[in-house]
Amino acid sequence: MAINFMRQHQFYNHTVFGLHIRAGNGEVGDFTKKKRGIDPSMNVTVWCDRVIQRIYELHAHEKLLMTMKNKDGDGDDNDETNPLPPLLFVATDTESMIEELKNATKRYHDNFQNETTTTTTT
Image 1 (cartoon, rainbow, N blue to C red):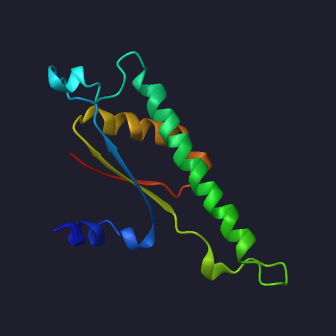
Image 2: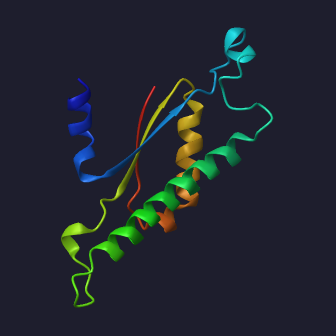
């Protein structure tokens, strides 16, 4: 089942960033007492912006490392070793987080240079 999902969403054609978000889905009791969700004092939009920014930074760092590593001596990049475009895989207990991440991704769309795809599951 998982392999079919990965094939369907072409994980093999992307650098996959996996994100598991426990936002609580309105749960109380043990979940709240153990502070297992996103801190309620934090603005969720800001949190999502920071996550997407960090993913962008990681992908940009990957590109830089590959560029530096794969110079073949003539100053040209070796196209066969360019990083794959990013794909964000989201698993969450709170469906509204998906929309928040999509909005944050749109805000960084230019930085991802039209490469970002979001695949989600709840």
